[in-house]
Length: 180
Image (cartoon, rainbow, N blue to C red; front, side, top):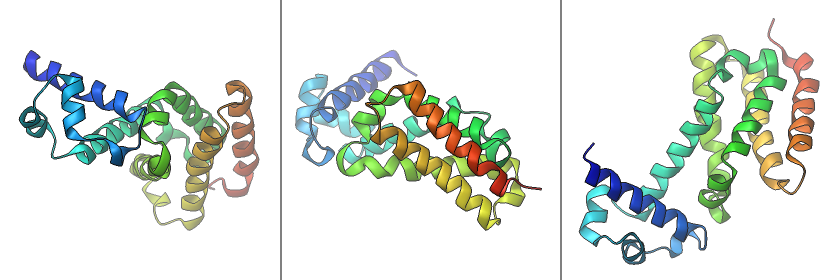
């Protein structure tokens, strides 16, 4: 990629993160983003359709980064729910700042849904027989969504304790639905 394009892209993203950290997505304008990034509107529109497309791109990158952080998640799944949820929480912890900025306010539930879809896709690639297993699907949804909301809603707790509690919950569930 051309260095100028790369620098412009970085400026757009940094300006967006700065603006998003202080206000809801729907209150951010292209004009103020361009002023902060020191670019003109046509430059912005050559990279993104609108503010929502930029936000969507950053959200997808965050989901990809989290799933890459738990790259072995497809090996864990229902057989090792405790390890799976621990890695998931550690990935949340590594991305806390970005999660709190991009997925704040009305956007809070978007990450959980996107993560669930992305992680299930990884798991089903490794274990195609899980795809139509209702119990495994429910269990994965519960672990992914539950770990996310437990983590996000309890960020004031000690991170190690929070992760340990979530891991213990998953460990307790394991004998109920471990595949045979």
